[in-house]
Image (cartoon, rainbow, N blue to C red; front, side, top):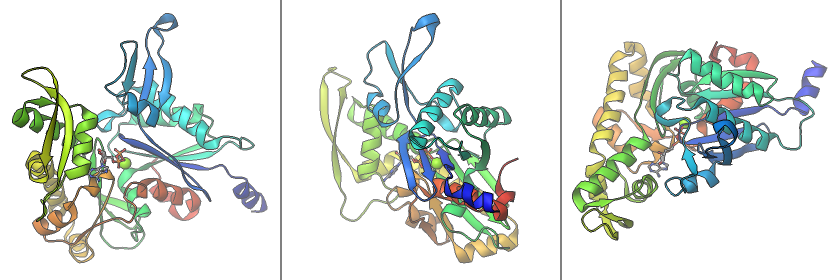
Length: 345
Ligand SMILES: Nc1ncnc2c1ncn2[C@@H]1O[C@H](COP(=O)(O)OP(=O)(O)O)[C@@H](O)[C@H]1O
Ligand SMILES: [Mg+2]
């Protein structure tokens, strides 16, 4: 016991939210110490064709779509799966080093939140990269569970809690009761698909080609699940497909609303399906207690109101939707005795 508390005092324990869009690291007593886009920039053609990492995180994201031929900016976690094992590992290693800097007296215990649907092989790869980055012990937790805990839902009670996590590559829904997942679904649909929908709309309607980053900026600026009474506009730059020149266009809230019809309908489908499939006692609880949303996609304007209206259940966005998952994972590590069951075996 004494040893335990001493250990806790010097503890270097970390919680990591390995997201398809953003990776966050939380340190006990310090809060979120790292919040970087899940992007790695690599230089090709090193010795024996080895790829050399030139940047990770924000710096690498700035390079997306702007690199010279010898450098590529990669999103190793694209579409909710680990698309590039080696680079996921490199990214984790760099970010863990950064977060543990200067305090290497004890090797950290690390809990990592992964998409609920990733395969056994992918889980092993994540675990191994954390180990090779210096972890003493590694725990994995599924996204809906971590999100629910981080959003402050009473996951241990015999009550239906519904959590909807909308990330970059995936949307995950979970119904949790008594520390267990009663129902969950993970679909490869999220912020990235919304960005693609915006880009394809702009190409069709304005004859202008825009990059992924620009599409995301438009979505964040004027994206919505229900246009407001006093619509806003945003200016964006792309390439005119007719003349091939750079061109500036103005896009309205209602245009982006139209562009996002498909991905929003798909999210509504996921919610409806979960309500249909979950046991009646629990759906009764959910009707009463509502749906809680986390993830960057939850920030899409009026999405909460739209879901509430379409399914007839109160829907709210968690207090800090972008860090709920990492904070929830951190809480599991802090209360491991009490929450052991929620860790993935
Ligand atoms: N205000 C906003 N409106 C709509 N989408 C947003 C907003 N802020 C962030 N996003 C989107 O949220 C996604 C990232 O969410 P995040 O929860 O970090 O994803 P992941 O868990 O997959 O890493 C991105 O697609 C981003 O464009
Ligand atoms: Mg996430």
